[in-house]
Structure formats: C-alpha cells, structure tokens
Length: 229
Length: 232
Image (cartoon, rainbow over all chains, first blue to last red; front, top):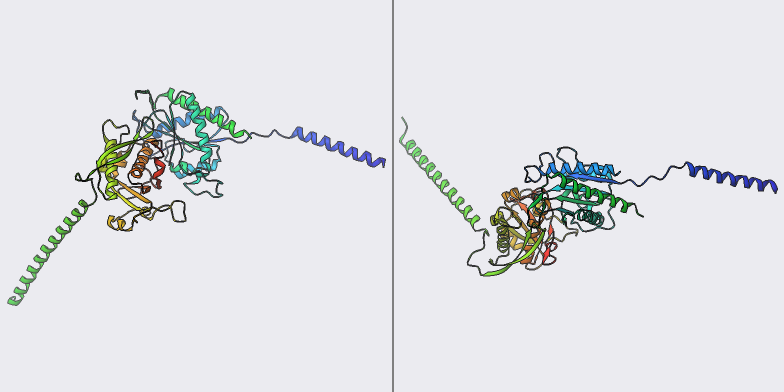
C-alpha cells in the first residue's frame, strides 16, 4: 500500500535525524581518570633517618613530595598525598589512603645517606594471579607486583636518562605491601662520584629538581601506557 | 617476773630466726650464682680450640647495593646454633670495622642468640607466623628447642639482636635490606637447612629494623643468595 510506504520512509528519516542530533549533542568521552598517590615517608615523631646536613628524612620526603605534586599537577595528573604537613601517619593509614584513591601509580618517597643516586624498590611479595576479591592486609600488593615492576622499569629509564645512577631491588615495606596499586618505593641518596665523593647532597635544590622532573616524566609516560588499549 | 622457761624459749626462737635468715641469704646467693653460670653457659662465642673451617659470608656493599660472597677461615663450634652465631658475629664484626663498605655499629655482640626450629611451610594452611613470635615476650629454652628440632628437614632460624644494634643501625631501605639479606644469605650458606629467618630485638617482635625493613615477617633465606653476587 502506498500510505504504508510513505509512513515507513518518514519513520526511517526521523530515526536517522534523531540519531544525528543525539550524536552531535553527546558529550565527548572523558579521558580515563589517572591518579597518582605520593606517600611522603615518616612524619611527626617518626623522624626517619638523620641526614648529613642535620635534617630528618621526614623533611626531605615532604619537600620532594610537594615538588613532585606541583610538576604532576602542571601536567594534568591528579595527585593524592598521604600527608602534607609534619604529621605522623601510620603505615596502615597510608595504604588505606592509596587504596581508596584507586590510583594508577603509588610512589612512597624516602631519603637516606647510605649509597648513592636513587634506589627503586618493589615489594618482594610473590605475584598473585588472579587478585583476590578481598585482598589480605600486608599481602595485597602481591596482585600488583607485576605492574609495579613495569612502573619501576619506566621510572628507572627516566632517571637513567636524566643521568642519575639507579639501583633496582625488592624490599619489604609494611605500607607498600598493603597497597592495591602499582607501587614503587623511591629512596633518594646523595649523588656521588666514582671516588664516592658527594657531588650533590639531599638538600641540594638542583638535585631535588632533577629527581622530581625525571619522576614526573616517568609518570607521564606511565599514563600514556596506561591509556593504550 | 618472766619465768625461766619463757626466757629459754625466746632465746631459742631468736636463734632460729637468725639461722633461718642466714640460710635464706645463703640460698639466695647460690641461686644468683646459678643464674649467672647459666647465662655464661649459653652459646656466646666460637671457642678458639674449635678447628678452623671455611665460612661463607655474604657481605653487603652500600656503594652498589650488592652482596658479595667472601670466604674466611674461622674456628666454628659443632653446635649449629653456636655455629650460626659465630658466623653472624664475624659478619657483624666486618660491618663494625672503620673502613666497612656497609657500616653498622655493634659488632659480634649485637647478636645475643640464634635459635634453630623446625620450619613452618609458608603459604600452607599452617599459619606462616610461628607461634614463637606471636607473643610479645618470648622465653626460649635452647635445650628444649634443640630436642624439638628434627635431624633432617628445613629449619627456621630466629636471630635475636640487642636493642642497641637496632637503635644504632643506619636508617634507610637499602641499608636495612642489605643487613637483613646478608644475614639470611650467610645463615643459609653455612647452614643449608636454614630456609627461613625471623628477627627479634631484645627477645620481642619489632615492627622494623630502623624504620623501614619489616621485621614482623619471615624471610626466605634462599631468596638472599641466588648467585655469587646478589642484589636485595
């Protein structure tokens, strides 16, 4: 029948027009949320190591955290910190903050007078696959160790390209072992020459800036990798 | 007027009191001497009369974060617990030397005891944490533990540090991990049955060595020595 054909054609035309309008009005798909947790180790009464210049480890880690937070913020990366003042935070609380943030990267920042350059540590827990629905406290990082090693590799490359000596190893840190995110502990030691003479101390602003810039570059690369299908 | 028999009775009671006090004092002194003698008989240091044997030490190096195998000839006692303490004492003496590559003050006296127990298989239904360290205050009788340890099978070594050692240990992830892993590796190299190691400080569990390395967990000794040169 002729009227039926015209009705069907009109309905199809309306459908196409509606779909076009909907496609034009639909908001652009937002990029995947990318969050980094920065954990400034120690704080409050828990001072950490005493460094050569009389400073405490807790002070250096906080300074570095603030510096790195600014660099990451300027690159459009959302940052969650475990502390932003000289406050004592228990390891369990640090892990809790990181776990609630559902972060794509967690960096626990430390400082030490021992050794030289930057020491990167990944949890020594054995990899666990698939991850448990309710991961146990202090072994939760086991499901993330493989990703943590990849993140450590990227940070290692960025720091090496920036001319710093880097050592990569495994460790047992209560806070990191409880985190459910790719987590790396970064311990910054003074920069030393081949003759073990200190060329840049932990209070050296230029050295701090170089370390923070290299780590920010690594996290930008990690974000690019995370967004790839 | 006090009757004569009461005077005699009073005198006898006074003499008995004095005699009892003297006996009590004498028994107290003897108990004190026995206690000191018991402490002295604990495995303390390798006797010089023991034959010299080759000991393998995994010595930490802060400059590159490595563990290097070092062979030394040491007088080692036959008892495994005393042997373990002797090799750890030598290792910590190296760290306490002025030109040490991994400087840690304290020396051999930092390790007060090393106890060897049957190892609990980690990851099995049995709790990974041995009951030994569950309680805050641990009282260990070396003789009783030695009787429980079977002749064969893996062992758990419990290393008890002095509080002063932990208090003076340099703080840092790498420094602490190198100390822990060099001890684990050295124990496994000289006592191959030692597969797991736990640490106590002054006989009680402590959260970390000097703010970083977790001392509440059991370390696998084999993880510390995969080859000649190891990183933590």
